[in-house]
Every structure is written in C-alpha cells, then in structure tokens.
Image 1: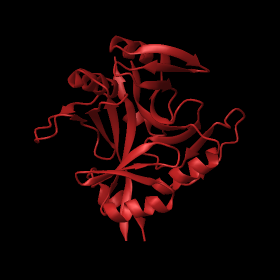
Image 2 (image 1 turned 90 degrees about the vertical axis):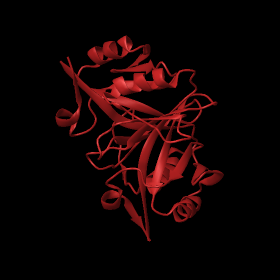
Image 3 (image 1 turned 45 degrees about the vertical axis):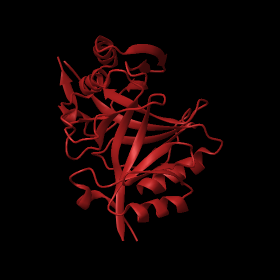
Image 4 (image 1 turned 180 degrees about the vertical axis):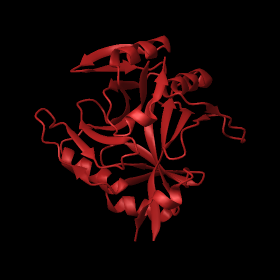
Length: 126
Length: 126
C-alpha cells in the first residue's frame, strides 16, 4: 500500500527576475514568500499557503513559462509504476524525483510528501 | 471591499478524446468525474475534489496542452483592476469572465466564485 495526491502547483517562470515574478504571484494570492536558504534552491521560491492547501512554488526555468503539477507520494517508485499503468511515461529522474508525461501531453513530477497533512488526506492505493 | 483566491486548476488538453484524458486525470487524483449537463459545457469535465480543495477542471482546447489557474472572486471588475495594478494585462472577455496575462507570461482567468467555502476563506482586499 502506498499513498499519493496533488502536492504542489509549480509556476514555472522563464524569468530574468525570479523575485519580481514571485512577488507578483504572492500578491495575487495574498501569500508571504518563504525563505529558501538550502543550497541548490536558488531556482525556487515557495509561497506560504495554508497547511490544508496544495503548496505553491515559483521556479525559474529555461523553457517557456507554464504551470506544472507535482504529485506527492510516500513511495515514488510505486506511484510511478501506478501512473505508467494509466498511460503516463517516465521522462527523467532529477535528484530524487521523476518527471513524467501524461497521456494528455502535460509534464508533471512525482515527488516526496510536501504538505503537512499528507498522512491523513492522501489517496491510498493497494 | 472584495474577495478573491485561487479557485480552480484547469487542465487544458489538446485532445481528440476529452473523456479519455479526463479519465486519466481522475485516476491520477482518485476523483470521480462530475456530470456536466449544462448546454455549452461540452468542452469541460469537472473532477469531484474535496470541498476545501481548489476545483479541478479538464478542458478541451485548440492550443497546446497546458495547465492554467482560475482566480475566483465576488467582484470580477474590482479583481481585474487589482491585478492590473500588479502588472497583469487584460487579454479577452469570455462570457462573464476575463482572460489575463501575468507579468511572468502565464495566462489565467478571473471568474465567479467556484468553491463552496469561498465566503469564509478568500482573501479580502480593500
């Protein structure tokens, strides 16, 4: 048995000023910008959403601006295999997570749990 | 004073089989597909998410597949003007809502309230 659900909306920005774009989205949604002090996180800014909401992440990318979805799970390999059976395709492993492509053409990621209430509210798959 | 917040994630599908693509996303998120019997709604399928979550809508589009965000508000004109002050631009009025473009290049919509707990949990702007 493993669990998964929608974890994060990632606002991919083809941006020369990530802080300006993050500020725009923070004001749109009335959120504070969380500090990201971890090494390697310079391409990311997190917005402080309520604990029960999906996370909102702003990311600097080299491709065109878009929005992608992250699916959070307590077993990445089991979740990727479940999604493959639905027709999704593995594209690339990045650090610990997988980038996949949906049957509808959308790219999305399968990542570790992000939201604090994951344990209680994720879908259970057996 | 008016209110707004993130209302809906719209999964835009460049699709020849909208029901198949809707089925894929419904199984990804463990949701039922809601019936859409209203005239003019043949391009849309709603997924039955918990009341406290953003809505998930699958839409047939003629452009490339992508995800866009809908902002729900009790005063569309006031919200559009607020967003214009942040740098967003009006693109097109469609029926009752507005399509806008963010400073980061993303297109999004400003629509009527969609989620049942809008009144209690939306941001208040004065």
